[in-house]
Amino acid sequence: MHRPPPSAFTASMSSQTHPGKGLSPPQLVFALNEALKHTAYSSLVTSDQVSQLHQDTLTAFTAISEWKNSFALINRVPLDILSLIPTHLCTQKDRFRSSFVCRHWRRTFLQRAELWSELHLSKGEDYVKTLLGRAKGSALDVIVGPGVSASITTLLSSRTEQFRSLCFEDNGSEDIKMFLEANYGPLPLLRTLDIFTDEIDPVINPPSALLLNRATDLKEFSFCSTSKWFPSLDCFAFPNLTSFDLSANPHNRTLRGAQLLDFLEASPMLQVVRMEIHADIQLEDVPQDRVVTLPNVDNFSLTVIIRGSVYGFAAHVSCPSASSTNLVYSANTKRFKEEKIFPPSNLWRRIVGQYTRSPLEEVALEIKGVPVTACKLAFRSSDGSVLKLGFKSAAFIEHWPDEREDEPTHGPIFDKAFGDATRIILDHPQVADVRRLHIHHRFGPSG
Image (cartoon, rainbow, N blue to C red; front, side):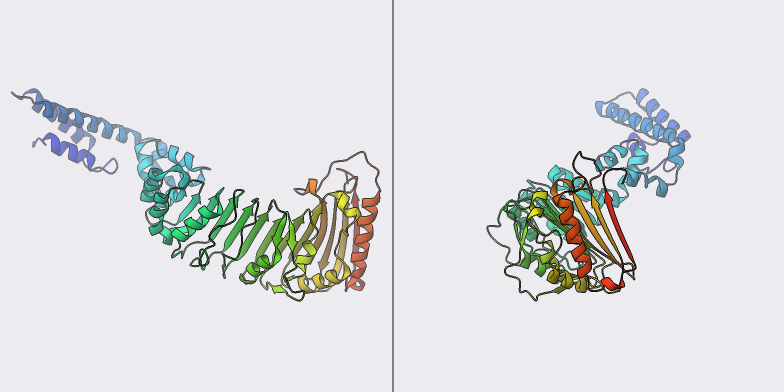
């Protein structure tokens, strides 16, 4: 029988893509035995031949181990099912670990490009290059942390067509601007933009054009900022945006209402709007009769903390198709001794007209806490849509409080909340049509 030379033996082993291709187990043993005899009976054995034999032996043992491993029940699972295992792992670190279980798993997982599409740029250039190679042409989820080098930014500039989502974590405004200007597009797949930061300073050099202006199909935009100066939304415009989440807590406690209205007006396809603003929304430069209509919004939520401008801003927005509208004012309870909890009559009638479309059927008043820490009014229309007004003590903004406190049941805050709620109910243009009225005061966990 023909005896393959060592180099041919090595080639036959390395050409295998899985057990069953190349040499069979008996052929492998025979080939290795022939190679050993050839070296043993050779009159002149060189160092290179010994090295080659050593390499051939290692290759053979590796192949035999793979064949043995192939009989494990888990490795008899079809490849299309086996490749789903990493998709159920919580972190990218776990996915990396799974690729080192065995060669069979590694080969299977590396061939599935979409498993490696999450890029954390702060992990360095070698990491990014490795994952870009594995991801091939798959859609990319890019996470931009602080301190991303210019070389990494340049590396990605040729891959913008693959961007599916873009997330900035703790970046300064200049860093964000530089990254977006360097990766300006095209961005046909970009659907999600998230910006989370508490380190934004004023942009020294404002962008010369709209940022991400080629991301025409962006659907979700989440902006969370606790910077000293709230960054301008004027540099963004997404005509097909469907979901907008804003959380702003500027240290100077002010936010221009005009820029927020401009952004909403430039996003006519919005369906969900959630805004939590820890500041006074300045409306001095907004004409009294300006109203931004969002015809497709189904869920509109606005919480203003510390200052009572929630209703003033809400009066400049109209969501005629909303099934759920939630307007919440939060502040220290001491402020309620001087300010109205619910909107004045003129704003209230305007809000009713801009957020409801069907006859009023039900009103529910709920007052919670001892002393009062939250108050909620819900107006339900015949079509099932709900308009909610409320206030929460700033200390309980995360949830409705249920804790019992050793304070009098009734007091100035309770009387003010109940009286102001009564005024709002009677001021509703359709109060005569109400069929059901619920009043509930929760003193503690038992209700």
